[in-house]
Image (cartoon, rainbow, N blue to C red; front, side):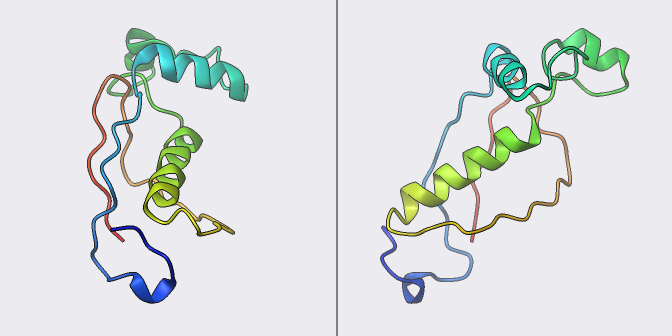
Length: 102
């Protein structure tokens, strides 16, 4: 379902499926472009594990970009004014991201 107006939104509705590129090369490239590269946490699984992480992470702002893309595909006429995110668990590079709900 494509959303045209806010009244079309039903609580709990699933957003369209999106399979973003969360591969290590993609997260590395994003981290470099965002100025986050160099510490290993986004570029290398072994370096991230040495820092106590479960593996290389997908940068939070990259995940927010995936989320805004999902919203835009679901409601192409919408305009996102602000996104406020609480990161409750790490998103690991080379792992699939699941579905989102409104």
